Amino acid sequence: MSVYEIEMALLRRFGQLEIRKKSLKKRFPLLKLPKIVLLECIENLDVLEIILFSLLSKRAKTIAKLICWSPLDIRLKFNETPRICLEFPTDPDRKWIIDYKTNEKSSHYVFEASRSRVCRRFVPKDNGNATEDSKQMIEHICELFRSPIREVQIAEQSLIEWIINYQHEIRYVYINNNVITSIETLDGILKNLKVTECFHLGSIKTDETIQIMEPIPSRSIIVWSSHWITLPSILNGNNSVIRLFGSKLTPKDIKTILKEWQKGTKLQHLEFLGINISTTLYPNRCAYEVLKDLNLTESDDNDGRPRTVKFHDEWIYQVPQGHRILNLVRSDGMIGSVFYDYVGKDGGMNNILFNLQDDVITSVERLDRLLKNLKVTERLFLGSTIDDQKFKVTEPIPSRFISIKRSFWFKLPAILNGTNSIILLDDPTFTAKDINTILKEWQKGLKLRNLEYLEIKNVLTFWDHELMADLVYTLSSQNDGRPKKV
Image 1 (tube, rainbow, N blue to C red):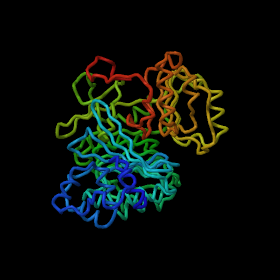
Image 2: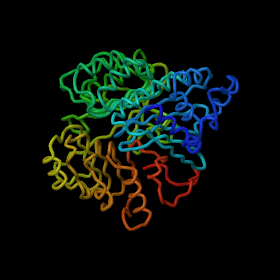
Image 3: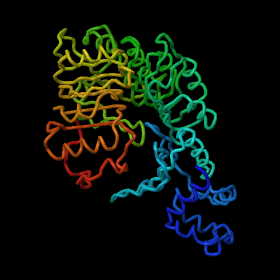
Image 4: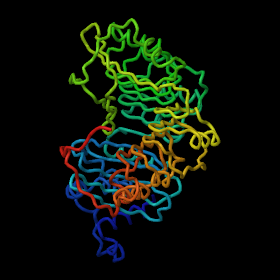
């Protein structure tokens, strides 16, 4: 943004644009005020106003930095465009957002509020390079408020080198699917980026023969396409939470992990371990290989043990219920609950449960054939599949429960015209308007009449004004007795 654009944005914010047209004698000389008065004026500005003021000139920035601001939570997120989210830990009911949207011809403010939260959003003019603009802006904010970046979502490779060089230690890092395309990039991240709280790695496009023996030193790790994480990497780590999808670990490896935990000499900080594997063994044989020679006792499903795992402030995982649960007692008396789930093999094409792991379907033809010829009556889970962004599916998938990773190809009509009861979509391309349409059609009662639960993982939030536009809704009480489980 140019200084002129910043000045215009500030004038619009305060309703002073007409004053700008007056003679110099009639304008308010803000920077000529006595220092103590000027600082008091700035202290009472909104966070976004402080940022815009500090961008006016070097002197304005120097003045703004004289004030000792409270620490600020700074998050950089990506969907199609960058978004900077700001809030004070001591005041979680207020949020400020700098939203870089495409084709914005001028900068403007958006104010959104509900009974419980206030959000102020600034949308800068589109200068054609939102990624670079957002990096410069976030560096400026970090310097101004003397606060580090708390969280970053990496959507392209250029951001990897930038975050390593600018702030190599960070609390939360999310790397989108297919951003990592080489062993060199993966190795560079693991060696040079220290993620202290939660490290979430999406699917990677690398040789499946690669293996990493060293631990990932984060409290919590969630890894998709985790074929490269080996047994020594887990056993020698100090992680509290481990969630692996598409793992190449064997049943024997998993048994080794449980035995080492039970001895109490390794994995002493482990609170939760979830491993999704593919195996050629039949389900009962697989379970036997994992659990044999372990001193296990049957668990009471109502023993009062925790049922949730906190990966992030906004992401709490519900431990599955209804499965057989066994207790494993550690040498120091700590109790671990072991539960397992598997896909039955009946050899037919009309499966009750059907899971497809990541990268099993790699062509449009194969995915199209699957959807047209495989009848899945109960649950269809599709891992990461094709990369062809032009492929679209507009026909419904006639399963009671569908769960799709990288669901960019699954379009709005496929939802609206379906009869699904449960829909989970990860990484879709729905806009706020699309989601608004789904909610409206459900509210009318003419479509989606079987729908019990819908989850669309998207960076869009309640504060996107198009999301809730023209919907009649009321705030819910947390204790209204409605079901909390799906």
